[in-house]
Image 1 (cartoon, rainbow, N blue to C red):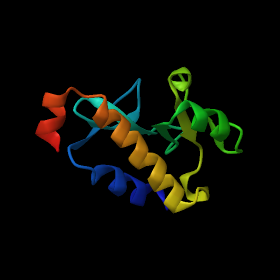
Image 2: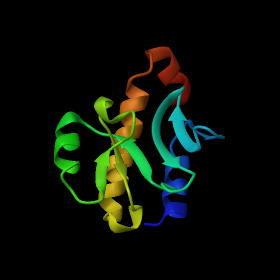
Image 3: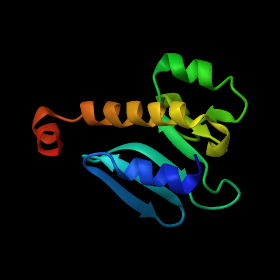
Image 4: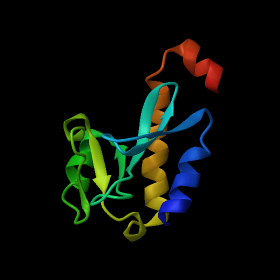
Length: 117
């Protein structure tokens, strides 16, 4: 899965909002109900690195994999950064993104979640 395909996949979730933040942030953020679930870095030298939120267990296991590291500034909150998405198995990457989306969606209040689903 390449970056363009992954961006389309992130945008297909119900209620997903895509927002581009200009400098100094330089990120393309995907969120649902105001809660972020994925983002891409848009500036060099980290251009198109992809970050998602994972469970504590996944965080420990995945940060030992070459090419995956704790997300800058968000690593302590269970976010990982995938340096090159093309090297990740597409099915597993989709599974991780879906779980991140569902985690963000489930953190919303019942009223907000009902408006989305």
